[in-house]
Length: 544
Image 1 (cartoon, rainbow, N blue to C red):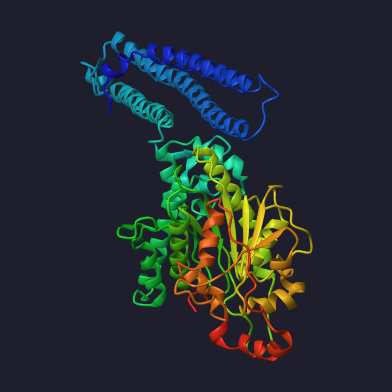
Image 2 (cartoon, rainbow, N blue to C red):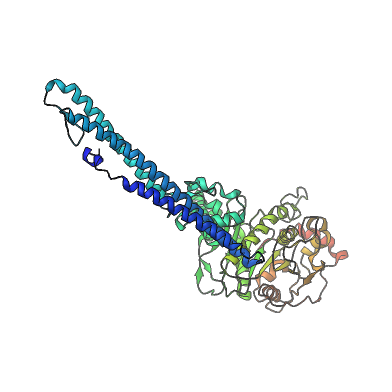
C-alpha cells in the first residue's frame, strides 16, 4: 500500500502538461498526413506504374501517420483523465487527513489513526478505515493510469503484445489476423507495410496459415509464415503417431536445404510462398532469388499428379529451368490438381484430368498471385518480366486464368491439355503478351488437344497468335518424341525444349517448331491411345 505521505506528495501537474503536449503532437501529425495526401495530387497528369507505386507508398505512410495521430490523441485523453482521477483521490485523502489532525487525531503514514483519549477508539477505527480505503483507491488508480499510459506508449513500437487492426483499433494478434482474409490485396499491402516488424511477427506467430497464403503480404513474411505452418503440420503428424509415415517424410523434406539453382554445389533453404495442409497438399515454392540481376521470373503451373508428395519433381525441374534461364522459377500448385488421367472404369470424371473443375477453381487464384508478384517486384524496385508456363493440366489452368485477366509478359503452353476451360476468349491484362506453345510429337497430350476441346478449350499449338516452339532433341541428341516426352524434356536440362523454355523466360527468341515426324496418326493410333491413357505407365504424373 502506498503511504499517506507519498500520495499527498504526488505532483500531478506533469500529467496535464503531457496531455496538452500529446494533443498538440497529434494535431501536428494530422496536419502532416493531410499535407502528404495533398502533395501527391499536385500533378493530376502523372500516371503509370511509377505513380501507382508512389501512391502505394504514400498510402502506407498515411496509415502510419493516422495510427500515430490516434495513439497520441488517446495518450492525451488518458493523461488528462488520469490527472483527474489521481487528483480526486489525492485531494479527498488530503481533506480526510486534515480533518482528523485538526480534531486531535494522529495519522500514521500507513493510514492508522489514533487519539490520546481511549473513549475515542471507535472514532479512530472509523477514520482508519476511511483513510486506508482512500489509500487502496489511490493504489488502484495509480496502477490503472500507469498501465493505460504504458500500453498506449507501447503502441508506438509494438511492444505491448497488441497489434493494430485494419480498422485502426488495437487487439490481440489472433483477433487482428481474423480480419486479414477479407481485405483486398491493395488494402492488405498498405496495412501490412504500415506495421512495425514486431507487429508483423506477432501476426505471423498467431496465424501463420492465414499470413502465409495472402496475396498482398510481403514475400519474405509469407516465407516465414509458411515455414511455421510446415513445422506445425509435421508436429501434428508426429503427435498423432505418424512421425515415421510418408507424409511426415515429405514435410521434413520441405524443411531440408536443397541445391541452389545457380550454385548447385551449395545448399539453400527451400522457400514457400504458399502452403496449405489439406487434401494432397497445396504449395507455392520459390526456386531461386528475385534479384535485379535476374533475367526475368517464371511461374510454372504443374499438371496431373502434382501434390506435396511429388513436389520434389517440379522443384528439380524448376531448378534446371532457373539455371538455364538465369531467372527464379515459382512452382505454383495452389490447388487440388487431378491425381490421375481418368478412372480405369471410365465412370466418375470428377478430379481427374478430364474434369475442368480444378482448372476453374485454381485460375482465379493464379490471377491474384500474378498480380501479387507484380506488386512485389514493383515494391522492391526489381522490374523483371514475368513468364507464366502451364505444363500438362497446368496449361488448362493458365489458359483459364488468361480468360479471367491474368497479367503476364509471356505465356507458354507446355504439353498443355488446352487453352482454358471457360467459354470465352483470352483476356490477358497485358495487351502485348507473347504466347508460345510446345508439344513433342507422340506426346499423348495431343489427343486431349485434338479431341478435348469441349473440356479444355482446344489445341494451343494451332491457336491464333501462339508461336509453336521446337522441342528438338534430348541432350543425348535423340529426338524428343513419344509418350515419355510429355515430361521428359523437363527432366533433361540440356534438351532443346528446355533451352527454348529458358530463352522465353530470359526474353530471348526461341526456335520455332520443326516438323520431323507426325504429332499423332489418328486413324492408326486412336484405339491404342485410349488403352494407353488407361495404363498407369502413361499417366501424366511428374517423374514418370
